Image (cartoon, rainbow, N blue to C red; front, top):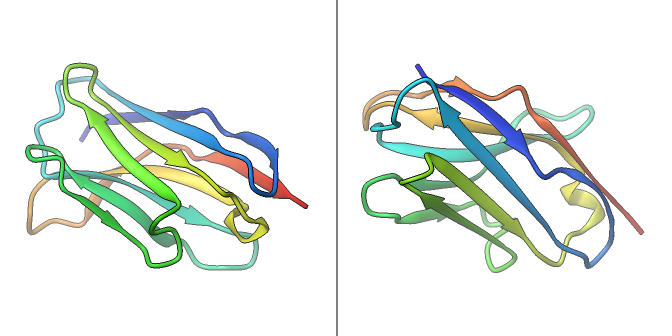
Length: 119
């Protein structure tokens, strides 16, 4: 497993943007994918986006498609989530996660970071 630490969260107004970063430390990440999940108060954790580490192929939840962009910097062992046109429904704790292999679940998790969007 790798250690993951998120940064870049905070409080913004509806329509504004935030960029989350997640740095993997401990060893060079060589797994299958890294991604982002979120959990709003009273709701289950949900998938937001993921990126295949080798190719950079992105995957998105329908709720964030066309607003969020996931990317990765392999040299810096870091994954990013650019969030534009934020809505109140995007308010949640955002978690970075890593998936070791194609057949595994996301098996390394960051501690989470708060994103609050107010109108």
